[in-house]
Length: 446
Image (tube, rainbow, N blue to C red; front, side, top):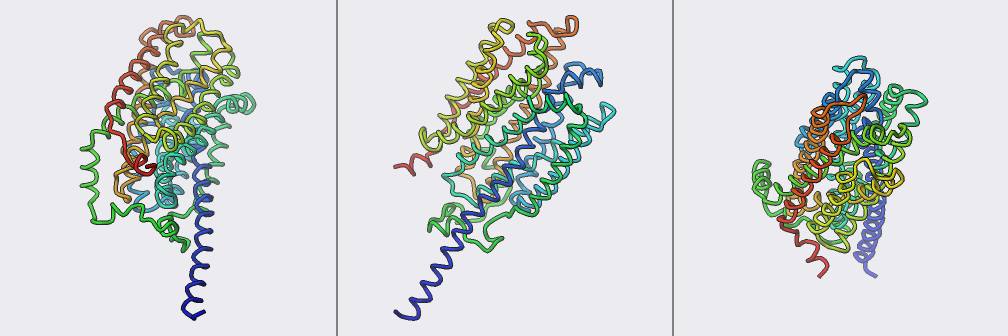
């Protein structure tokens, strides 16, 4: 055996060891992002459980409560462009660490606030801070994983994130019953600070930060070869994105599907169950918990089906929103006549099919330059959170228009808000119908 052959063999063994290290460590980075994302969802939907306490303690109307809760979503939406730029330029490690500290401060302040202005500011800081988590995770996926793993891992991310929504339902109601809502939030803020520090210690932006090979080098396939032929400016990439019919159609879809989720699951579900059906908070929270459980399963299942079965981003999202819209019909037709026991499967199914938006991120990412993927997803993410903010406020305005009868809103007020939601979902389904599907998955499977 020649000396050059020995050297080649040694190099191959060394590369194989580095490849194994890379394929292991990418799951450490991804796992850190999963842990962080749990708290993003917790902060997002937690007002639903403490809505009655907030209305009583601060003397809030339904409109004011909607404004308070929506103050998470406006800064979240506004931060999507900076989040994408930070993720693409600075990297996930530093950007997540800094902004999750801001989220921790906002969460603690939410619990400590003694005025409406201060609690709104705390909610605002929550939105600013947690806004820089999702897009950095998209960058981690783009840097550490293969393109055909993108949608499935996005679904897993949303599945695990929904664990935060589960914690913000029955477990939060139980904790509030023991220590009160204020202590629950400032201790949560302290724990989030610890998570921020763990991101700095554990997370790495890309394999080369640990002197490891990329998946392209390991597989011998340049997954982003189409993007390396010429350098395109940020402004040109933005212009191309805004010129895509798909972007605007998927934006409409994102606005209405997530708007209805946050309007109901994120704020008005528990007041509806308490006021219309006379349920105690803990039972209403137990029922609400079925939504994020269903959504967790649905996000994974629909993301996986998009990659492996339907091999279509468009079809997975389109069929999903149709079924999701149908699940609202009982709330519109029989808002005060649904057997209480039926709410458990109903909210699970609603949550499951509300996860139909998961393939949208891969739908937008495909065809974008590699360096622009996180920013493109940030531009899409804006519409989810503008929808979440506006639907919470709009539903509050509708409820206040009818006014309270005694200490609760009438059934007709809730029926009208649910009707608005189902009409919006029909518009979203029509928008998705006219999108053009990606051909990437079909080509790979042929």
